[in-house]
Length: 83
Image 1: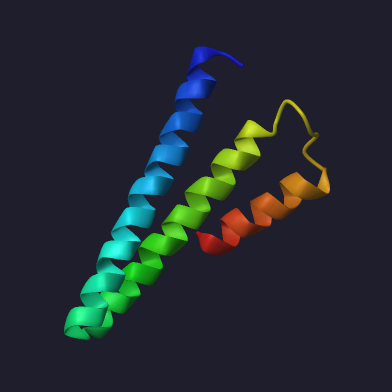
Image 2: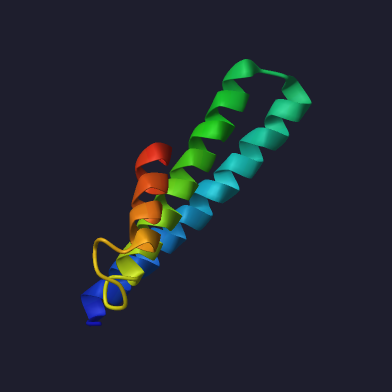
């Protein structure tokens, strides 16, 4: 794995953690203020976190498993569903 691939994985997982943090923040604000839009934003950022984590994990598994492996297909389906 070269330096660019490692940087790509770091960016995917960092983005996933940031999106997860945003999701928790908006969920907290939803509990405080009961705005429906805050609930939707929380769900949207959670979906983004799932998408980035699944896509990053699928990219990480490229050297170990072929494209048609069930684990990579499952991660791709999760990623596409979350997107």
